[in-house]
Each structure stands twice: as structure tokens, then as C-alpha cells.
Amino acid sequence: MNTSDNIIAMATPQGVGAIAVIRISGPNAIKIGNSQFKSVSNKDLTQLNSHTIHLGHIIDDQKELDKVLVSIFKAPNSYTGENVIEISCHGSSYIQQQVLQLFLRKGCRMASPGEFTLRAFLNGKMDLSQAEAVADLIASDSESSHEIAMQQMRGGFSNEIKKLREELLNFASLIELELDFSQEDVEFANRDQFKQLLERISEVLKKLIDSFALGNVIKNGIPVAIVGEPNVGKSTLLNALLNEERAIVSNIPGTTRDTVEDQISIKGINFRFIDTAGIRETADVVEKIGIERTFDKVEKARLIIYLFDGSSKDISPFENIKKQFPDKELLPICNKVDLLNDTSVNHIKKTIPDTLFISAKQKKGILELEQKLLSLVDSGRLQSGESIVTNGRHYDSLLKALEEIQKVKEGMEVGLSSDLMAIDIREALYHLGEITGSVTTDELLGNIFSSFCIGK
Image (cartoon, rainbow, N blue to C red; front, side):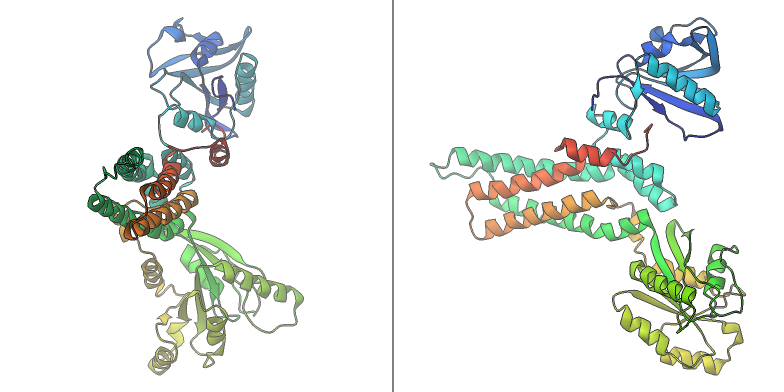
């Protein structure tokens, strides 16, 4: 990819809107923009100050395409670190395409996915983890995912990694220096201090690795399967949680033939609820397929809500679900509590402990259910502002770095020579550097930025 030419792309989504923004970045961005811009006050964009906005018209030969506002950002004080202009035009699809095609003819090329942010990284405007946080911020659809993305963009996570890497690099340099004086048998790196550093790095890495379980939940949401026999109120519960008539409800067993999915945000955490077909023996071919899909969805869910009717004395279906999915978090919920007497409630409490009692139809116990769902998420770290890992690539690099640190610690305990320890230290530094972009390859950058939207 040529990163020294001039690129152009829509910075706003495709389609019709009040305003569309077209971004150009590159060494000649302002000059190219000026060639097709006619200011209402005859200004020359190349002679104007950075971070200013100017009114005028985009002209194609003698044809006026649109009345626009042009924002100027001069290098290095721009998003990409290059000269940048942003053209705010009217949101007609025709106008957008005409302006894009005009500047493509005048020396720009279409930007690749994430190329603006890639240039920002290459020009030192942000490190790699901050660049990835840009994509997370765009994709954030809850308060918690937005909060973590903002924290990473501010450099909270990467600053922690950079500090650890810098300290480890200092000791690595001293150990490498010892190799030059191997004949004299001297130690430049204080071994006690080095042990303390390795312990501290291990603790930080373990903490970050452990945070990935929460980070992954916040980023992708928690898949929750609602299962149970026919007519126990699964669809009614989904509608009560979503506060809308999302699923069809009837008193006919087997109404839900396929899975119905939707998500809600509870205190900033996304939960993806899956209403499934009622589990029972049936000769209906379509219903059988629905029940098969139920088990497929349960396999992928992190949590199973087992919903049952309190009037039923048979708990074998619940026991079967427990046996079939022993590794899943299982939350038993008794529906239609408004139809039960105290004797029935006490019986259920004895036979199925930890049961939550609700009435989905009357929306009783829904708030308690939401609180129970939130209690399954360790959100304390989020509230305390600690660094939380949400990126699978970062998680993998942290695991590999910790593995190398453990090798160094073991090497010190058995008196391993400095040259062998230096190999493991270099590997640990490499994996930490992968996170912030101190160490990169074209393949790595290609994989990361290909997932970005064009125009960012």
C-alpha cells in the first residue's frame, strides 16, 4: 500500500442525509481541494490557517456541484498527521458520487479500509492499540463498550504496557551487556531487583489476561438462551425483557418454531436473548427442526435461563438440561408465580434451589431477573476504571508474553546463563511490542486495518 499519495473517502455512511462529509488526506490534499473549490470570498485554501472552515462551491470545470464547507487541517496537526481537508456537502447520493469522482480524476485514489487510521499510526499520532480502539469506538453500542474504547483511545491500556516494556528493556540491555564481558564473570543487572520486576510484570499481565473475560462480554454482549417446555412463557418473558411484542405469544404449544433473538442493554452491559422452541417430543417436522436449532443455540450461549411452569411437579426436564450442559451457567426461573400458592412455592424452593420467581405476563420479578443477570458480570473493574482487555489479539500477545516471563523466572531460579535468559526476555519484549505497535509486520497491519470501515 502506498502511504505517500492522496486518498479520499466518505467519512459519513453511504446513503441520503442532511450532510455528507468527504475526507481527503495526503501531501497535496489542500492543493487538490483548492483546485476545485471556489470560496465565496475568493480565499486560497493553501494560504489559510489550519483548523479553519470556509464556505464556497465545488466546481467541476464550469459546473457548480454544490455549496459546501471545507475544513482545513495542516500537517502534522491532523488526524492522520498529513494535510487533510474535509468537505461537508449536502447528503444527496448523486452529489456525493459527483464530488468523489471529481477528486479521483484530480489526483486522489480511493482509501482502503482503515487507511486514514493506518496513516495516523504510521505517522505517530497514536499507537496500534489506540488505533484498534477507534474501530471499537465506532462499533460500541452500549455505555460500557463506549467507556472502554474511550479509555483505550486515551492510552490507558497502552501506557501500562509501554511502561512495563520500557522497564524490562532496561534490564534486558544490562543482561545483554553482561554477554560482552562474559570472560570477566560480572553482573550489571541486579538480580534481586530483576526478580522483583519480573514478579510485578507477571502480576500485571495476569490481571490484564483475567480482565479479558469481562472485556469480551462487554464488547460482544452475553448470549442468553431462554429454554423450557412449550407454553411455559418463554416468548412472553422475551417480550417483557425487551418491553415490546417481539415474539408471537399464544396458548397453542409449539408456536415458536425457530429461534427469535434480540438484545437489550442493562446498566451498560449488552445481553443477547434467544427465545427458543419449546423442548418436547413431537412428530411435527418443522417443530423438530426448531428444537434442533434450540440445542445449537444453547451450545453457543454463555447462560441458560430454564423457564418452567410452577404448576408442573415434573422436574426431570430441568435435570436433563443440567446433565446435557454441565459446563453452562444455568438460571432456573419459575414463571406464572401469580397462580401459585405458598405450598407450591416452598416445594419448588426445596426441589430446585436458587429458583427465581416471576410472572412474565404481569412483568413481576423482571427487575430482580435483570439484577441477577448483572450479578453474573464482574463489572467492578469497569466501575473502578481499571484497564480491561477486549481485543483477542492483545489477549493472545499477553498470554505469550507471560509465558516468556515465566521462563525467565524459572531460568533465574535454576541459575540459567545470561545468554539463554536473554532469548526469553527478547521474546517477551517482542510480544509486548506487538500490542502497541513497537513491533509490526505488513501482514499484522493488513489484518487489523482491513476490518475498519472505509473513511476511518
